[in-house]
Image 1 (cartoon, rainbow, N blue to C red):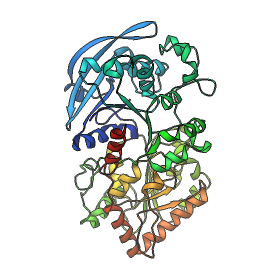
Image 2: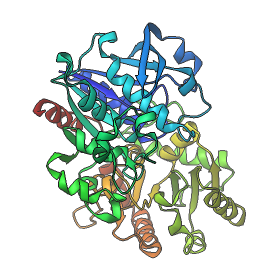
Image 3: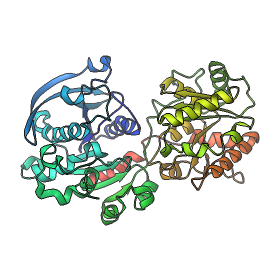
Image 4: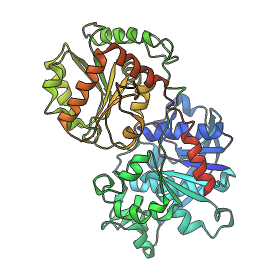
Length: 472
């Protein structure tokens, strides 16, 4: 089966969040199963020079979008058996950043149109195009409205994957024809909630909607999680399913991770304490093997649960713990974390920014991993933490509920600790329960064993994706 995976980012070329990880690992898993899965992304100037050097130019042509014609170049390369295509247009993609530009609507409309226009030039007419989030939401729209009369396009099916429903691609009515090149005759399709809503249009036009966890597929039928799209999703529930993401277990592997102070495996997991010592030393924290070390790798935003810390931060850091946070985001949360690092300098470190080396060291060194997200479509960090034997403490929402199983001291089952309501003191209670497990050597050994023996690869999820594609 031929599958084209259209995304705004894909590892190893460009990655901002979980979408980049999925776009870099799911197609590889599909290819390993014998499918012909290929990836198409924009050719951003932010892609590192050493990666751009390996690209091969295929051809160029013009794309018509609204009233204008624009240059479109096509480049390609192969990584880990997966063919990648890159859409080139320096006006749109020679920017200092990937998202957050004033003309994002036009940039990603151009890319979505290019995904459909490019097929004859690469001689690849897929059985399924899998579009992802609002940036490629126009792919199934353009395909249905403008290409179904072409014989080669008539049997192409579309999957629309929702990684985060909060960001829907909402714009004013004035850009429908001039920017998107879509007739006002289709206003009803494109409008929702008194504006153009690209995600809503994709939900209408695609053949299947996939969310990145089973729980999230149910949650987004509820107004609390759906950001206004719950009614349209309930009407289209027959299209909807959830598949829990996997992680790239070759990349996230404590046996081979080059950033760790000491590599270890499931059999040699006791070596993990050497990483704890190494991170304490590097961060200038007291070197203690007996203190519970809690880590976070996160965006510093309200969606990631940062509000929960305000009422209980003093109480948390008054305990005999060490705490390290890696991340960036809203300036208020950044200053909040810096303040507590200053106030509790012997217990806490706040690394503002993102550094993959420090992230790996946190996964490999900490005893527990805190992830109190207000909502979490899937989450990859908790699965990475589990693979490294770092016990997750999570709010039981979305993919966190699906992947973190509460520890049961009676039968020694479960791989983590969760709390059920978005509340500061429920989170603190979960941390206290985690500390109780930490101080019970038998329980802590059992939960760490359960965590590291789990399968967090794509092995199961890829079969579910294949079933979706083949059924279409």
